[in-house]
Image 1 (cartoon, rainbow, N blue to C red):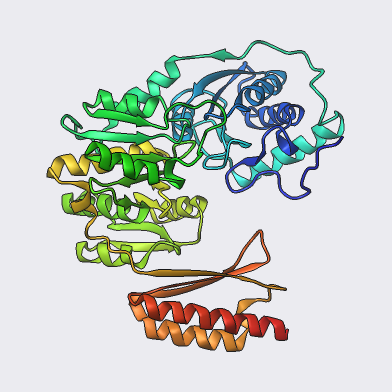
Image 2: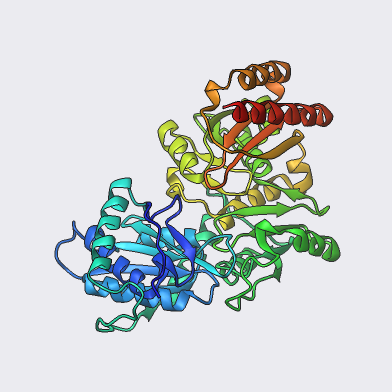
Amino acid sequence: MTTKRSEGPIFGTDGIRGRALEGWLTTAAVEALGRAAGAVLSRDSDGSEGEALIAHDGRASAAPIQEALARGLAQSGIRATTAGLLPTPGLAWLTGSRPVTLGAMISASHNPAEDNGIKLFAGGGNKLTDAEQAEIEVRLRDELERVDPDAESNEPAGPALARDESLHSAYADHLVALGTEGDPLDLSGLNIVVDAANGAASSVGPDVLRRLGAEVTGLHCAPDGLNINADCGSTHPESLQARVLETGASLGIALDGDADRCLLVDEQGQLVDGDAIMTIIARDAAQRGLWKDPRIVATVMSNRGLHRALSPSGIGVHEVGVGDRQVVEGLRSEGLRLGGEKSGHVIFGSENGFIGDGLLTALHVLGVAVRNQATLSSLAAPFIPFPQVLLGLVVSSKPDLETLTEFQALRARFEEELGADGRVNVRYSGTEPKARVMIEGPDEQRIEQMAVQLSEALAREIERG
């Protein structure tokens, strides 16, 4: 039986991702990816043997995938070493801090255990350029034309994949030394619950916090290959909220499967999302005069309460489209230090390689709390989210929204009514036959009425053709 593969781009917005050991993630396809990536990313080497670093999250499928990738890399003259279980930002930092050809993270982030993926980093820890991705895709398709992409590899096994335990320690040492903005961080006296989503930070997360002096309770820090993100982590923080209240903890930290996202839970069991986290860090930076340009980057889906919370501190918001790539581009183009999404994907600027790091995010907030001897709830209090209504509408077609005159007139009327204290966002789903209507404003009952009326107007005009 032949595994079905998409005819579209192989790399999505966050590398290659799909059902583990199927499609572009069969062992033969991954081995071919290793050959293709090795050929492209080692092109500027001096002819000596290259080196690659690999890490993975807590999925059972990581072992055959990393072994296949290492075989392919070996066939292109690159020797691979695995760090084992380690967060994506840890692998990115290691790739950037060592003279290696590339790094490869095997993870599907917050997806269930049945999925997996591969994210590649070029030397220096940088994300691949569009040109590099395109060339790797061309080479990969060429590779799979000459081999059976669903067969087991017939190539020589190559050298065994070496594991280097010191890589885990090096990343932990990096976080311990970094602290927040160069200040020593002493977490003595704090009781912290860490939910690692049975993923990549299950070991390093509690380890770093204990080394900084905190009393740590690990929650969902025991990956068995199948339990990653299962009713836990940043996508399901309910058990963390309950544990914080049960133990009387100072706060809780919720990470996702590969630990590039972070949500927090305050001492009262209330969730502190990415918008609130950015509020805390940005207000502290402004108070301490750390930034020459007092702006952050946020997406169009961030709550308007973020703007209102930052304004009294003189902090502006540079708004970009949805997705961490858009946030990174905003940080680069504007030369800013902080950006992110309400999902908890918080990204620091060039000083951190534009990589989202859930543990580093938590350390920054902990630094603010320690310096001010403040509770998390008091730090998050300035961020008061506006009510938000999101409706999904099944559509038979997706005409350009700008051409729908009745819909646009009603939208303009609602936007004028909301003014600076609200917004309207309407877009089509990229994967489903749906339109999504989101309205945000101070009056929940009124914005619910607006969302229904706008959805009905959109549906009528689409049906009329």
